[in-house]
Image 1: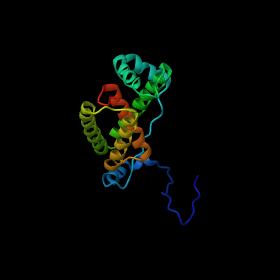
Image 2: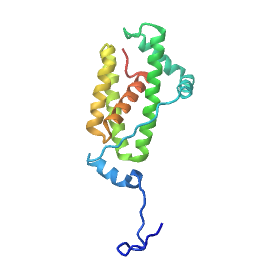
Image 3: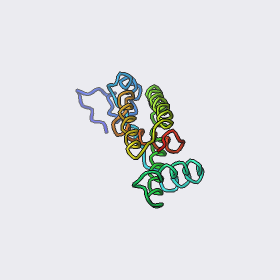
Image 4: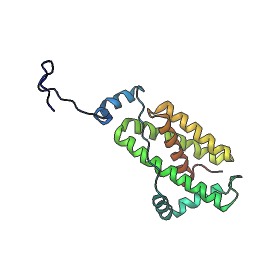
Length: 177
């Protein structure tokens, strides 16, 4: 639609732009902690969770073995539900982490360093201390705080990534009870 108004240049155009037009600027702001990336991810569907579980039987067995040690997870159904939720957290967090890697490699590297540091501490902690259900929540809380201090992502994203890391550690063994 052209209106030929005398006070608007003939070359003037109105365009709709989105956040994606400013990714370079967002990364620069994130590097000085003036912007927080929101890297949320949809929950995986049932087929994705079941597929992961079928392909990673030994990892699922790790979670189930650990879950059986937690007092509130005292039935096979509760252990199964916990395991499913942890796999869901893991898959969702992996999607969010991949999105951060694509969007801002520098912040992704910061997240990776935080995770590697916490994992190293958990490996030693699991060797010398007996864990319990409080260990699970404490690990989540501590790691989420560490992420928020060192990585420019939103609180929601930090929550998502922290749960994913806890699930990963339950799958692969650094976090044990």
